[in-house]
Every structure is written in C-alpha cells, then in structure tokens.
Length: 140
Image: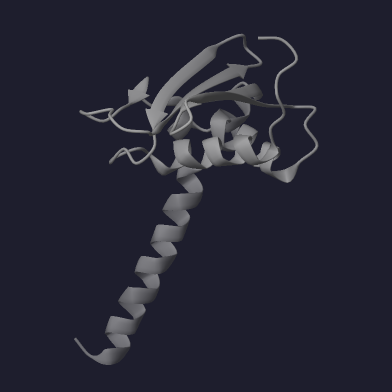
C-alpha cells in the first residue's frame, strides 16, 4: 500500500468515526431524560469530624451549579453505583453523600469518600462543583 492510499484510508476512518459518533448521539433520547432539579452534598468526617451541607438547584446562579446539574442528568451519572467506598474507611477522610433530585420525582443517592480508587470522575466533578457553588439548604 502506498502513502497516498494509506492517507485516504486514514481520512476515511476519521470521517467514518465522526459519522458514527453523530449517529450515536441521539438528541431525541437525551431530550426525554428528566432534568436535574437539585443536588445536595453532605460532607462529613475529616480531621475535625465536621458535617457540612451544600445545595444547588435550578435557581442557583452559578456556572458551576449549571455544570453539576447538567452532569447529573447524563446517563453516565445516572448509572453510578450507590456507593464507592474503600475496604478500610479509616483515618480522617471526608465522606460525601450526594443526593440528586430529578424533575420526574426520581431521586439518586451516591456515597463516596476521599481517595477511593475507582471513583468515577463524573461523581468527583459533581461533588466539586456543588461544593464550590452550593449554599446550605434552607431545610433538611
């Protein structure tokens, strides 16, 4: 195979991959997913043993809150396991309980701790965004 033929095959492979990605992205299916109404994060433990609450909802005017709400509506977040915990929960780590409320009335709760190997990045990003943008909830 000469260089020109190889270049054509590479170009066709890239175009095929792009077309397949567009076909896989089904906007109609994404539009049927309920939106995220609110996300609360309870952070407890650590060296001082404190408990803190953070909340974002559709009225929170912060780009990080919008990002967290968008991420929590995605299938990769909805498929998260209920917990990502270490074998040994010892020693001054924070525990995070994330409760997501959807406009459909559905609720998802996920629990994790600091430095747990295998915790999905989407969960860690939602936690970070809620803590950065969140306010204490008015009623618990």
